Image (cartoon, rainbow, N blue to C red; front, side, top):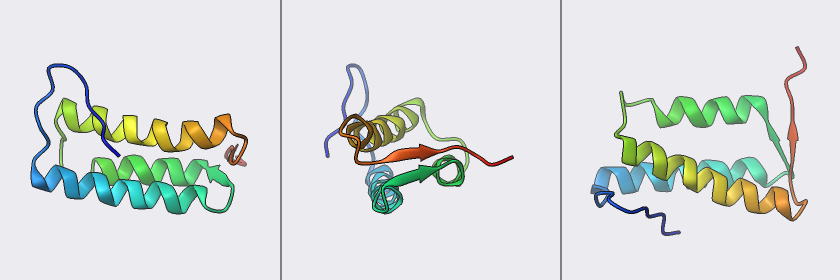
Amino acid sequence: MKVERLLSQKPTSEEVRELEKLKTMIEQYVQDGEITHQEIQNFYYTMFAHGKPSADQIYRSLELYRNIVGEKLNKLEVWYEPPTN
Protein backbone atom coordinates (compact mmCIF):
# COMPACT_ATOMS: atom_id res chain seq x y z
CA MET A 1 0.00 0.00 0.00
CA LYS A 2 1.46 3.33 -1.04
CA VAL A 3 0.92 6.22 1.36
CA GLU A 4 2.12 9.62 0.19
CA ARG A 5 1.58 13.31 0.83
CA LEU A 6 2.93 16.47 -0.72
CA LEU A 7 6.30 17.79 0.47
CA SER A 8 7.10 14.58 2.32
CA GLN A 9 10.43 12.87 2.08
CA LYS A 10 10.75 9.32 0.90
CA PRO A 11 10.70 6.82 3.77
CA THR A 12 13.97 5.21 4.74
CA SER A 13 14.32 1.44 4.48
CA GLU A 14 13.91 1.24 8.27
CA GLU A 15 10.68 3.26 8.07
CA VAL A 16 9.39 0.99 5.32
CA ARG A 17 10.06 -2.04 7.54
CA GLU A 18 8.23 -0.37 10.43
CA LEU A 19 5.25 0.43 8.19
CA GLU A 20 5.11 -3.19 7.02
CA LYS A 21 5.18 -4.33 10.65
CA LEU A 22 2.32 -1.94 11.50
CA LYS A 23 0.36 -3.06 8.44
CA THR A 24 0.66 -6.71 9.48
CA MET A 25 -0.39 -5.79 13.02
CA ILE A 26 -3.46 -3.86 11.83
CA GLU A 27 -4.51 -6.64 9.45
CA GLN A 28 -4.31 -9.16 12.31
CA TYR A 29 -6.38 -6.87 14.53
CA VAL A 30 -9.26 -6.56 12.05
CA GLN A 31 -9.21 -10.21 11.06
CA ASP A 32 -11.70 -11.18 13.80
CA GLY A 33 -14.16 -8.44 12.82
CA GLU A 34 -13.56 -6.10 15.73
CA ILE A 35 -10.97 -3.60 16.82
CA THR A 36 -10.53 -3.15 20.56
CA HIS A 37 -9.30 -0.20 22.54
CA GLN A 38 -6.30 -2.28 23.62
CA GLU A 39 -5.39 -3.02 19.99
CA ILE A 40 -5.48 0.70 19.21
CA GLN A 41 -3.21 1.36 22.20
CA ASN A 42 -0.83 -1.39 21.02
CA PHE A 43 -0.68 0.28 17.61
CA TYR A 44 0.35 3.60 19.19
CA TYR A 45 2.86 1.94 21.50
CA THR A 46 4.46 0.18 18.53
CA MET A 47 4.48 3.38 16.50
CA PHE A 48 6.46 5.18 19.22
CA ALA A 49 8.49 2.18 20.46
CA HIS A 50 11.76 3.32 18.90
CA GLY A 51 11.76 6.89 20.16
CA LYS A 52 10.26 9.91 18.50
CA PRO A 53 9.30 9.20 14.88
CA SER A 54 9.44 11.93 12.25
CA ALA A 55 6.27 13.84 11.34
CA ASP A 56 6.25 12.00 8.00
CA GLN A 57 6.50 8.64 9.74
CA ILE A 58 3.62 9.50 12.07
CA TYR A 59 1.54 10.67 9.13
CA ARG A 60 2.28 7.52 7.12
CA SER A 61 1.47 5.28 10.10
CA LEU A 62 -1.83 6.97 10.84
CA GLU A 63 -2.77 7.08 7.17
CA LEU A 64 -2.04 3.36 6.89
CA TYR A 65 -4.26 2.69 9.92
CA ARG A 66 -7.02 4.93 8.57
CA ASN A 67 -6.93 3.27 5.16
CA ILE A 68 -7.17 -0.29 6.47
CA VAL A 69 -9.50 0.18 9.44
CA GLY A 70 -11.56 2.97 7.85
CA GLU A 71 -12.28 0.86 4.78
CA LYS A 72 -13.37 -2.08 6.95
CA LEU A 73 -15.56 0.18 9.11
CA ASN A 74 -17.21 1.74 6.07
CA LYS A 75 -18.03 -1.72 4.70
CA LEU A 76 -19.28 -2.83 8.14
CA GLU A 77 -16.69 -5.62 8.12
CA VAL A 78 -15.29 -4.58 11.52
CA TRP A 79 -16.55 -2.71 14.55
CA TYR A 80 -14.93 -0.91 17.46
CA GLU A 81 -15.16 -2.48 20.89
CA PRO A 82 -14.82 0.35 23.46
CA PRO A 83 -13.06 -0.20 26.79
CA THR A 84 -15.16 -1.78 29.54
CA ASN A 85 -13.97 0.52 32.35
